[in-house]
Image (cartoon, rainbow, N blue to C red; front, side, top):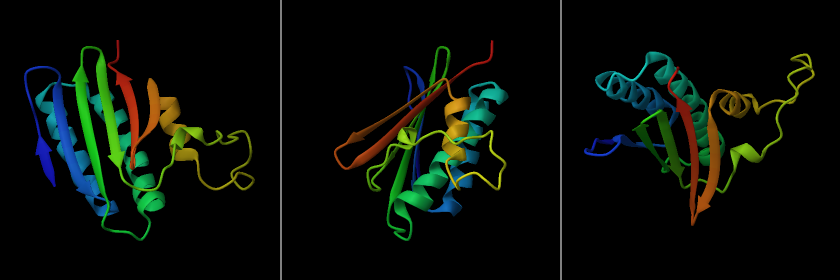
Length: 147
């Protein structure tokens, strides 16, 4: 596990974790501490952590599956109006934002399994994007500070 903070320029949190569910909590706690030291609003931090948890869990469970040798790189930038997050992994190519949105009007027993975490991120984030960079998935999302 590595943490890097740099200055000047935007405040930057950089963390690389093994692709394991057990590592996600340590990453989010480190992020929470970084954000508190920079007086980032708790509401924004909580939203970022919820979205990160959903996306990182998807990478571990669906991207890496039984392969426990993968890593996930998370970079968080504090910018003028909010937070930008970049998640990079070497799991198989997958754009989480390309999947159809679930029909949330259906009864829970009638819905297809899965897709709610990504739906949740789409609704909470102010922007989302995906790109494939060689053998690397890169997911980006941002959250503006509350007004």
